[in-house]
Image 1 (cartoon, rainbow over the protein chains, first blue to last red):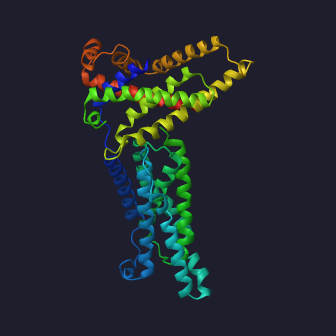
Image 2: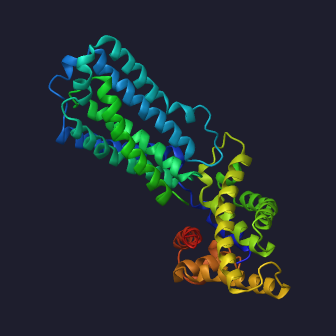
Image 3: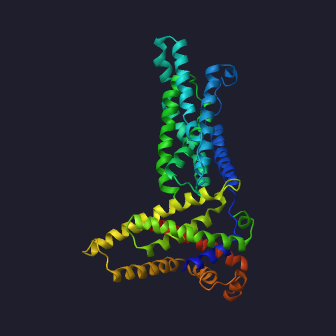
Length: 212
Length: 176
């Protein structure tokens, strides 16, 4: 096939319109997220003290942290999904959530006596947290991978990792409504460990499945 | 490109045709860098055009077109030259003389490449291959080709689209 013949074939195919990126991204992500929300309310649910905790800064900070993670990951994945888009601040914004945790841990160190640090870090149910965050992240991650596959990430591994970071943020937001531990120490160890597992998975899966 | 995305086929054809020499130049340079014959470049050109086509919805029409095309071309050319470079290495292992490539062999390689492109098309399913051959090699319009092949225009359009996607997939798979 000569090149001008190929161009003729491509021109003939121009009427076949692929879905716009914004729509694909929103739809795929929404589907994944809905699946996880349903799963969460069926198998986990809000913790008993959920409404009573709404005025506690440590409890609320969990959501500031997890939503920062989700948003910064989404923005980065969205930029990485299309060729030739500059990352700008989005490349740095993913460090915002870890930075928040460091600051929160320093504040916790200043206000909580040293002999309670370990107990707060270990918490009540660390293994549960390590399982739940990756589990709840699966559906949004699959949705984001579909969206990225529809796009054209020129750096598939990084795009996969960014999608995984966003999916973990969403998963952690859900899980935080169930998890009884509110100390930044707990988040710094177990939430971040759970996220790291998912991000590593996203990195490798991206290299494998997001090439085009 | 805006007109093309809005459905103007003639504008789309003009855009791709105008783009080709620019891409060819890039591909030749990339091939020269890894020590491949210039004839090998055309394959990379075609693969890039195919990628531009299949991913045209990823261009943000409020942005300029050049960085988008450059990023796709860069990505595809790297893949393509890497793949062909590897193949050339095994060729070189077969032939004793590494440094000086006799002209006959260059012809031979060019012949190989033509066969490659054909083979990729041959690997497609019957319907898809027929559809693509009609609109590309015979240059028929969808309407005429559909009448000749005895299918509806819509069905033919789907075959062309699936065929092109499958071709891109074949390119990608021959990489690993």
